[in-house]
Image (cartoon, rainbow, N blue to C red; front, side, top):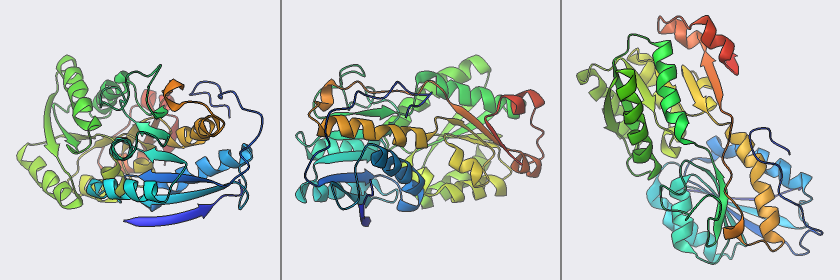
Length: 328
């Protein structure tokens, strides 16, 4: 469990809708934002920096009108209810929450304090909101997912490893969005002639056991479903994949930057740059439940050529040309 307090000195995104309409004046009193993450401070720092930058651009200045109270579960979702309750006890004015587990914890803690969620795969499917257009209640924010992205990851993995017919899907069953994504992956596998082998992990130790089980399943490749616990322990995942010679595809670029093979998903920094516009609107009187939830319309493909060579793989030139980023 980690606690931090940050005073802030203080876009138009091609992948997201246009900025929300700004109000007239900034609030006069100091506003307390409760930032609650299912993951670690180390993992969230680049995204929090992007969030802070946009806040500054909107006029939220250090020591004048804003403070962020930070709480991190470090991948241990059992800590989230207490962390959310602690933020409510210190009377934060608004929650900004990262990922589905943190969003559920905040939602169960309060029906009054506004909640801006960031990076929830399927807010409707996991029961957080009634609809994307009118979420209702005290919650709104940004999703990191659309239904097509899961199928696309399997297609890309097949392009990288055409011979792969036995693919493990690693998921965290305590993350409500992971089973939903598994179902979508299974539907895509039927059309691609791939046999999937779901393996579950709820902790770092269970990640080790899952990789040991992959030998029994005679796995030829791995899909790691996006999850804050996996993100917290991403270097462990990357090392185990390399040790066992298993090509793996991930949800976000941070895995590939740290040595993973390939990722396909939204740029989470973009979502965090966008989130302050929701905060701004709510602080100026907008009802969270009336603000539509936004979804990305563009996704980035990132490939690590060095990792491919270590695995004995040759990335097709056509795939390299389509990549948004190639790490040599």
